[in-house]
Length: 382
Image (cartoon, rainbow, N blue to C red; front, top):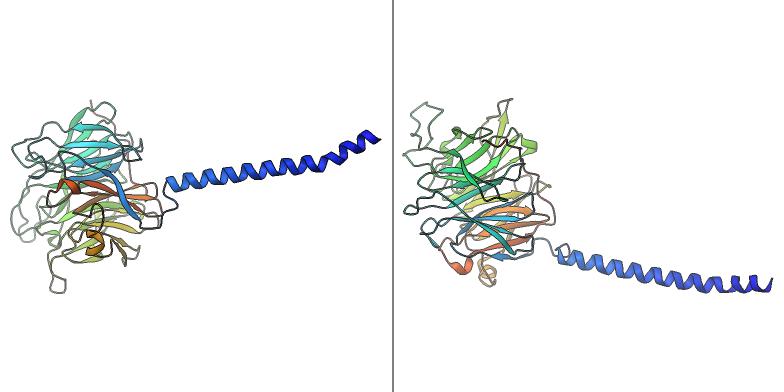
C-alpha cells in the first residue's frame, strides 16, 4: 500500500514536467513557423516593394513568367539599348532571386533591333517567347534541354479599307508586325498583342500561321496593345493599351485596360469594353491578376505599379509619388511586365533610358495568389 501511494504522489510532478516540455515544444514550433513566415514574406505589409534580383547584360529585362519548376524566367529586350549587338537571353532565377541558368536566343538578326517581349508556359513546361525582331516570331524553348524552335511567325498586314475586316489592321498607316505579349486561351490557342499594328493575333493550338483575331481603331497609337490575360474563367480577355487613339472626351496620351468578351464555341471577340482609363502618360504595360480580381499593372511612363479593383476603380499606386520613387535604392524605371510568385507580384524594371543600374526585378507583396493561367498541354511536333 505504501509503495503504491508513493508512486501516486510522484504522478502530479511528472505530469507537470511533461506539460512543461510540451509547452516548450509548442513555443519552439510557433517560433519556427513565425520565422519561416517572415522569411517567405507573409509578415510583410501589403504592397511592400523591394528588389527581387538584379539583371545583367545584355540588359533591358522586360518579359517575365513563372515556370512549373517554380523558377522565374526573364527575357531581355534590348531594342537598340543595353548590349544591342548581343543576342537576347532568357535568365532563370530561383524563388530567392539567384541566377541558376541562362539561355541564348538563336537565329536573331543582330544587325537589326531585336529583343524578347512576351513569355508564356504551356502545360508541358515549355517556354513560348516572342522574338520582336526583323523576323517576328514565337520561339519554343525547352528549359531542360535548351532546345529551341520556331512555333509561329507574324507578318505585316495592310491597313483596313473602309468597311473591310479580317486580314488587316485598323490603322491609318502601314506598320510592321511587332509581337509584344502572349497568353494561352482556354482552347490552347496562343493570343499575341501587336503593339504596332493595333491588333491581337491568334496562333492555333500546335503552332502554324497566325491570323488576325481582333483589330480596332482605339488600339492605334505610338505604342498600342500590350499586356493580356484571360479572366472570368476564360470568357473574357483583359487587354492593356499603352496609349489609345484619343476620342474627344479622353485625356490626351492616356492608356487603358479593355475587356474583350469571347463569344460562341469558336471564341470570337466581342466589342471592346473600357475597364479602366489611365492618367496622361501613365503608359500601361504588362499586368497580373490576383484571385480577388484585382489587377496589378505596371505603368512604364509613370514609373509606378497601380492596383485596380475588380470593378475597375484605382485603389493604390506604388510608390505613391516621384519623390518616394527617387529615394529608393533602385527606382522604378520603365516597369514592364508582371507575374505572380506565390503571394508576391514580380515586376521587371527595363529602364526606358537604358540605365544598367536600373535593370532589376521588383517584388511587390500582394497578400494574395494570382489567378491561374491557362497552360494547355500542347503536343510537341516532330
